[in-house]
Length: 367
Image 1 (cartoon, rainbow, N blue to C red):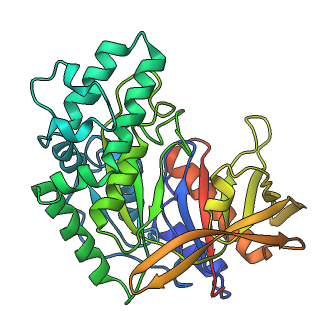
Image 2: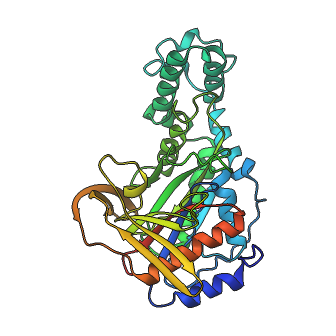
Image 3: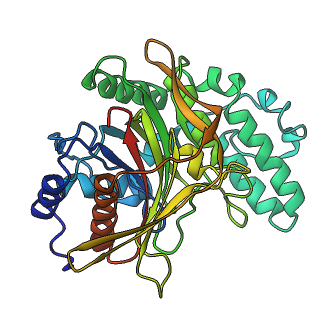
């Protein structure tokens, strides 16, 4: 397929082919970029808001940059807003009470810090302990725990960055149908890059009843875990606040099985996509090998072993969570219409990026 045929005409062809009550949402693009696109309501959803940000991963991270790019191309993107890197960096530069850090980094007072803030602490840890990985990792884990703590939240709760985060959340939630779920996603500037997806390393968290700032801090803290940044200081990170789809199925679709096998592969589980992409022990997703040969769409199914799935559970108004439940997932298959739509979207993503691409997808409970 010519890579120029990747905008509205081709998207309309996909929607026309798959208009038979299918509602597949393409949530994320893993291998080279991480996106969140989809057909939320069964028809193409063109978000009309003007994009006033440059598509710049230095500003909105890798995932955010691709979201804006796909939105501008006319693809159906579930509603979202971004918290840019400037806002999160300002949070990290907020001056802290050094005593509040002692429960998390016991010898914090021995650190040579001109100003006590998260930005200086993470850089000091990297500079001072880069050759002592065990000590470095211990301090980074302590800093990550502090970021998610009430001690951190209370100190930055009234900052300008906190105000920006709450305003963006309110603007998003008031633009959605009443009582919609919101998920907070990471968007690091090095995340979902060409040849370096960093898939599964960062948290994505469905927002519950707490302050949206607290949910954002949990996602930010995931970027401070040593396995995410084994050789450098934690990278700058933007955040994405996005409408969360209530799923009957979700998973990952790969536009190429390998560099020599041009068939696609679709792996899926019942419930939220998290069940298939979180690396949950003992879960082997169901899968299809898919290919288009002339006018014939060919699929080959392999049953997996899925004993646990995640469901989107409503606690009360605008308060949701993803919870694991035990299931007996056998004789579960996708329809050919759903498979065809997933295949078309992953090939469209491949053409837009000019390279193989892996996508996270979801199928809404209403079809």
